[in-house]
Amino acid sequence: MSQAQTLTAVQSNPFAKGCAWQDGDYVPIAEAKISVLDWGFTKSDVTYDVVHVWDGAFFRLDDHLDRFLRSVDALRMTLPVDRAGLAAILHGCVARSGLRESYVAMVCTRGLAKPGLPRHPANCENRLIAYAIPWVWVMDEEMQARGAHLVISSVPRIAPESVDPTVKNYHWGDMIRAQFEATDRGADNAVLLGPDGTVAEGPGFNIFALIDGKMVCPDHGALEGVTRQSVLDLCAEIGVPTEVRPLHPDELLEADEVLTCTTAGGVMPVSRVNERIYHNDRPGPVSAKLRELYWKKHKEGWHATPVDYGDN
Image (cartoon, rainbow, N blue to C red; front, top):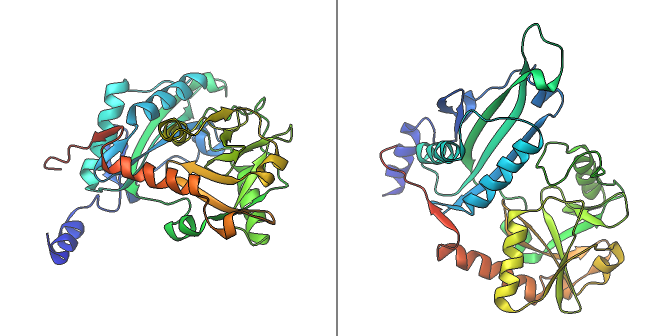
C-alpha cells in the first residue's frame, strides 16, 4: 500500500486514532466518556491493565488477562463479560482501529452509586471500559539507546498496607511528584523507595540491578509486572542468574548495571542513577543484550496472539 493509500485508509476509518468499547458498543476514542460522578474518577476506585500489540499481535495477552481478573476480584468488582468476552472486546478494539502497534487498556471502575442506596462501594454498579490507541513509549527509543538517567526520589511510594501495588491502580500521587522532582533535578525519570527504605518501582516500570553477576529485582512494594517476568525469563535463557529479594538503594548505586522494564517500552537500560554513571554513560552489555533479545523474540512470535483484523 502506498503512502497516499495508507493516508486515505486512515482518513476513512473513524477508529484510526483509537477505538474504545463501553456500554456494549465500540466508539472512536474521542467519544469515550466517563461520568464525573463515577467513583473511578472521584475516588480513584478503579483497576486496569495494559497489554501491547506489536506487529499485529498481542504480547502475553493471557498474562495480562490473568492479572486484570485478579485485580478485579481483589477490589470486589465484577465484569459484565467473562474472560473470553473480555479478550474478544480487546481484539475488537484493535481490529477496528487497524493499529499494528498499539497500547491496549482494560479498565474496571467502581461506577456510580445506585439511587436510593447508602454511599458504599458495594452499592455501585461497576463499569468496564476498553480501548486501543497508538503505541506509547514510557521512554523513547533515543533515551533507551543512550540509557535512561534516573534519580532516587525523596518521595516515598505509597505503603503497600494502604494500597496494594500488585493490584494495578491509578493512585499515582506519589509517582507524579517523583516525576516532577526528577525533571527539577535534570533527570528523565525517578526511582521510588518503599516506606521501609528499599527500592520499590518507578512511575510505570519495574527496576532490575546487576549485582555480582545476578540480576536482582525487588520482591515487594511494586507491581508484579508482566515485562518483569519477561526479563526473568530472558535471563534464564541467556544464563544470567536472578534474585527476587529486597533491593537497597546503596546496592542500586553500586550495581554493575541497572535496567527498567514495562509494557510500554519493553527492556529499557539505565546509564545514570543520581550521580552514579554506569558503563561510560551507556547501557551495560547485559542490559543491551536483554533489550535486543526481547525485541528479537517479539519478531519471532514469542508469547504472541495475532489480531484478526478481518474486514474491520
